[in-house]
Amino acid sequence: MFPLHDENPTRVTPYLTYGLIGLNIVVFVHEVSLSSEQVEQFFRMYALIPTELTNGFASEWTTLFTSQFLHGGWWHLVSNMVFLWVFGNNIEDRMGHLKYLIFYLACGALAALCQWFISMDSAIPSLGASGAIAGVLGAYVIRFPQSRVLTLVFLGFLVTTIRIPAIILIGIFVVQNVISGLASLQAAANMTVETGGVAYWAHIGGFVFGMILSPLFGLFRPDY
Image 1 (spheres, rainbow, N blue to C red):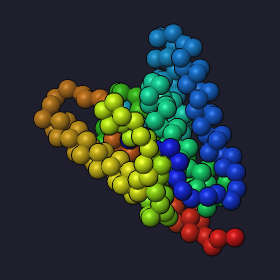
Image 2: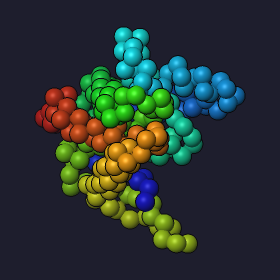
Image 3: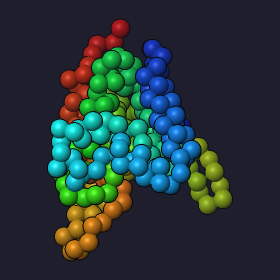
Image 4: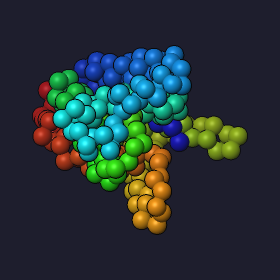
C-alpha cells in the first residue's frame, strides 16, 4: 500500500510542507554526491549518535534537529516524503505555517530523544524525518479520524487504487512499529552485541508526542 492523496481540502498553500520536502531532497542529493568516506563523516557530524549525545549533550543537541534531514537511501527518503506530502498539508493548514514548523521540528527532536533513551550507549547514527512525520500522523489521526486516503495497492501483478480509511493506514504504521520496537528490546535483552536497524522507538515516540502536542498548536482551532 502506498498513500497518494487524502480527501480533505486545504484552504492555504502548504508552503512549509513543500519546503521541508524540498530541503530533504536537496540534502539527500548532496549525500549521494559524496564518497563513502565523506558520507560517513557527514553522518558523524549531523546525524544523532546516542553515545555522543550522552557524553556531550551541550555540544551535540543540534543533531536532534539536523538528523531529521538526513536519509539512508532512496526508499527511506521517498517513503518519508510521500507520507509528509499526503498528511502534512492538512496539518499545516489547520495549525498555520509557523506553528506547524515548530510542531514538526519539536516532534522530530522528541522522537529522537525517545530513541536515545532506549539506546544511550549506541554508536549507530540515528537519522531520518520519520519521527517528525510520525508526529504529523499522530496529529492527523485525531483531527481527521474519518478521512479516507487514495492508496496504491499491489495485488501480485495487479496494481490498483482504492480509498482506505486513514486510521487504518496509520494504525498499520503504529502496530508495525510497536511490534518491531518490542522485538528490538527483546533482542537487546538476549544479546550482548549491539543491534542496529530502524529507529522504531523514534517512530512511536513521534506519533505519541504528535497526538499530545498538536492540540496545543491549534490543531482544533475554529475554521475560518
